[in-house]
Length: 221
Image (cartoon, rainbow, N blue to C red):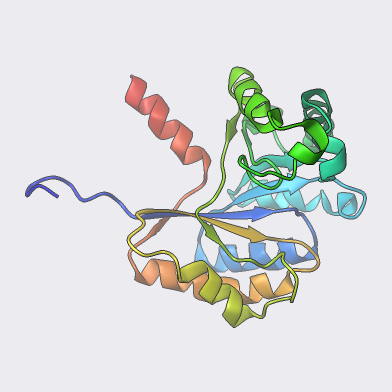
């Protein structure tokens, strides 16, 4: 860094996929106590649709709602681009009572934007097509560079989730953390206070994902 230049700010984006669920309430309690914002990439499948009203509290407490998938069934949503966007349309309809549709401009592709599982259903070029179509439709998509590995087999405990998140931070100034707020990831909520404390002690500012978009818009003025 050249002397006199401002230091790049250190920022962390806490993101939670596949909720809402009862675990979401616990995570919201922690975020409120710690005064930290987060972004929730939500689904509206049969196994969690009854918990969608939790999103009212999520929005009221200043967190961002973003799109993930309605069904989250790879074999269904990745059959074709049309199937994917029909799924997103259904998701937005189910979220409309709880979140302003105009704010639902960010999405996370199930499996990430470079996943290879989708090829099994929609061919080798489906993700490239979907990313192009997303941009053309005005959506922004986001992956991650840190993962709690809390949705994988083995049901990691809170200490393991904490290690998974923090071990690869290194010299990253921008950290996008993938976690999950499902019924099955209760230990993620247990690990969250220590994760927040660690990033705070290491000089990171907590941000919502849509702050990335606002920064770019300001740069265009």
